[in-house]
Image (cartoon, rainbow, N blue to C red; front, side):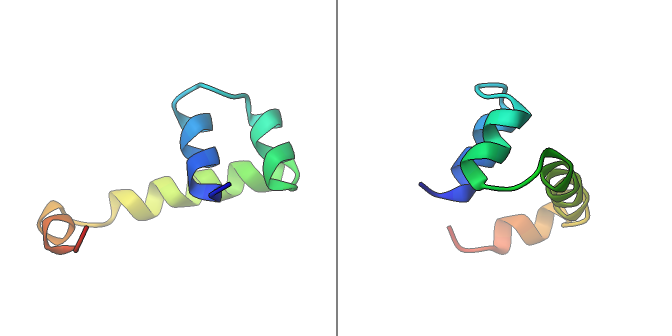
Length: 55
């Protein structure tokens, strides 16, 4: 399973952080760090740059 899909499922509330961490094979605290840092990185990309990225 794609790790990004698991994280998205957690962010959307489909699974708990404990379930997400167990699927990924990491500790909950490490997962919180990953999710928090990905939110910061996503918020630093300007909208114009997002449109320029290939999909």
